[in-house]
Length: 474
Ligand code: FAD
Ligand code: NAP
Image (cartoon, rainbow, N blue to C red; front, side, top):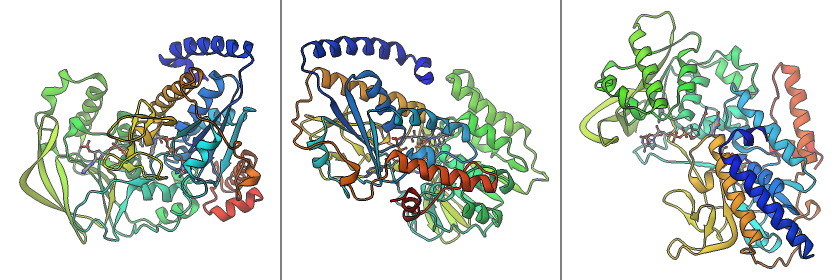
């Protein structure tokens, strides 16, 4: 709620809320108001923010969230870095939403496996898809599938305890790791690799990852970008954290910054501040340092081929901010490669009009399309979060998008645009096989927090679904 007040969006939201109450009360006076059932698929930020909006603004609504895992919160639990606990405070807002009397959680229920979209459509007035992006983009270069090439998504899932990722067993016995891509995920991963394990012990990093990181021999982490410093995808807060990491030296390549200082006056403010920080760090860098650990960003190099313990990089130059390959290449030796070029959504159900090329659901402002050609809207079906926009944006961006789509749902319901007849009742936990309710999640949550307490950390996550269900009493 506090966050809503801070946004420019708020004034619209307030006005909208006022309109809805008026419309809602008219409907009531006519005696035709009935509960509108909305099903949200995916309990990440997009799902929870949309639920919050609908429950607040659409009188007489009930929201059910189905979630693949027995536990909620998506990437807030399984993506956000363990040493950023403040980011996870959004969970408090989501928990308040979950306590609303018209909200129900059905964990351990996967769309496309345990239930079909068709079934949901027969039970709900509107279905909102927010099941995120649980795959990753490929570089499509030779030998990308070698055992020493791991996606950053899998590595993040490993240290964060996503069920299924606990057996990744990344080989950290070599000194050099090369991360391909320069977004904030890449920086998160570099920080986890270069941080002192003792500092991570106070976080909710899983015990098995702490154990592996404490034995890690990694000393040099390269961060390779195909474009230049002015196009770097990481942001200033994340870079500053790297520069301040104890016992780690950041080394830039002077050549990468040719022509950069002259462009500073024309840059928008956030980009200007980020570039100034890079240049300041470059001007202060000394080759001799007592720190064994090095963070080594490299720009204007595109991955060409991986071959055993080295990668061939194409030297690029910029044309209209795009990377254009030259005929020069370089080799970089490395023991482990982490591909960090973005997540990717998948199509969970055949009934979804899915854009395979861009990895998102075809939609017009959150209304899912029937097909990509006619652009006709599939009434009562919506998409929000990374599944609708593609895999970029911080939680705040996801929140704004989810609020906007939730407003569209409310508008459509109030204007009777959603006229689908429901032939079945809403979901019921008893009819689903081992569905985890909110009370079940609370038991898991409590068990994790207790296990964490004994280790001096906020929680020790359960990483096995069967164990989660057992603790929940299912
Ligand atoms: P998700 O968070 O992915 O939620 C999707 C949910 O759907 C998941 O719970 C998933 O289990 C569920 N699901 C998947 N398939 C199915 C199915 N078939 N049926 C039912 N449920 C399903 N933002 C910040 O502001 N600060 C940060 O520090 C930050 N760190 C990040 C670190 C990483 C590594 C990543 C990848 C992102 C980070 N972000 C951060 C961005 C933030 O996590 C996203 O903006 C946000 O999580 C996107 O929300 P979403 O709801 O679209 O997807
Ligand atoms: P991202 O920010 O989109 O960065 C992707 C990186 O991969 C870019 O450097 C991109 O370079 C590069 N890339 C893409 N395709 C490539 C290719 N074929 N070859 C070489 N490089 C390629 O994605 P992300 O890092 O996965 O982050 C996703 C979102 O989560 C972002 O919005 C991010 O800010 C957010 N996030 C936030 C935090 C935080 O707030 N602390 C932490 C983690 C994630 P180009 O720019 O040249 O395409």
